[in-house]
Image 1 (cartoon, rainbow over the protein chains, first blue to last red):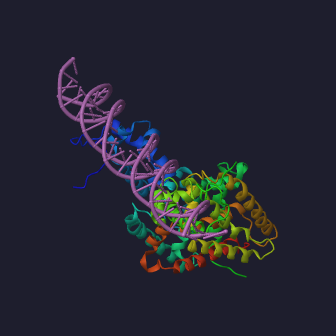
Image 2 (image 1 turned 90 degrees about the vertical axis):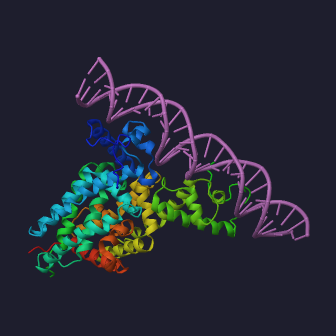
Image 3 (image 1 turned 90 degrees about the horizontal axis):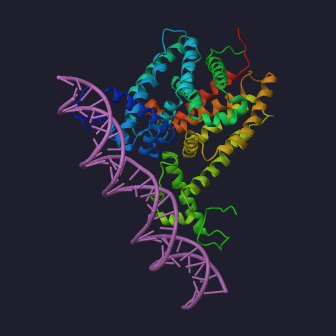
Length: 220
Length: 220
DNA sequence: CGATAATTTGACCGATTGGTAAACATTACA
DNA sequence: TGTAATGTTTACCAATCGGTCAAATTATCG
């Protein structure tokens, strides 16, 4: 009943995926990631995607029946890998080390997959019309689980007591900032500091901020 | 030579602004803020803005000649007030108090002017095509100035040594997160914690994070 | 009031939008 | 090699896009 919307719609009999199919779908998704992440869903045209992908519009529509289908395929793929760093958050590990490596991993993703970050940012910024369920379901569940881990650490006196949800929000926002607001970051840092070193600087600063900020208080 | 693009284009002889002009332009800008902040520039149509503003498209175009003109007017207005909190950053004040009130002010703006925040986020996310100069010019200059203030505080031993630029980035990102990613924040917090109290919780958490994170180290 | 300027509207324009139909070209495979 | 399935293109469609125009309406003010 539910149809997939992707791949060779006019050749209904095939189940196997051709080599060409895989290649072209990959081309299309990569091109679509470029365009969607820059202009948002409604600001993106199929023609644009087709041009970046180096094929004609009808040819593109042979692989994905609608603009929605392309976007949905992208979102699904990104959602799947986007939360891996948070999933890796380990209750048994050393809190300081876990937080440090979570920050580092998120920062690496901002550096290496800025398009994915911006795709997600665009979607949420526009009210998350396509992923509301994922946010309220799987995402919330995962965050709830990790929030409990953080709370346990605080109870055990391993880190300062703090709101675990806002802690996670602050790690998300500070790290993704370097992908989503890249233009602004580069403009402010200027040409001299805007080289790739900015990610190392950010990592150093953020580790300092969070590790000191969350360290158990030894007030004098 | 340079023409204003706004207001009564077909009545070139008037210099004075009518009561109707002021009212209608305000209506349009408010409606445009709604739509632009949700869909970005390219995702927004003039018809949409006109519908929200409760007037016909030609009527709207009587006050603003083009879509660009509306967007430009909005961006200019937002840019002007958006940086006020940072400008208020006072070198003579107490660092702890200055940072605390900067965070609070930014958080209040995220709460009270989420549309403005999202308009800006959309613009930057899409590569800041309309405000590149403002970012590289006035914004960079302001941040440079305040970065020097922060550096002076660190040299005086009033706060921990840290990269002042990334400090500012982290305050921007953590606070604006509550406007730009509002849907996600509410989804994760769930109905129970998603009331307006979330801004107070965020304020408490962020003050703790930044004040401890930037406190001069008293390592044991 | 009358007249002049300011405002609003419906009808319309060419360009672009998402998407389709069908002819054509290429591939895979027996 | 032949042929059926897969892949690609040209031409096209109705709807919507940003924007114009002239005519009609309303406000302003002497």
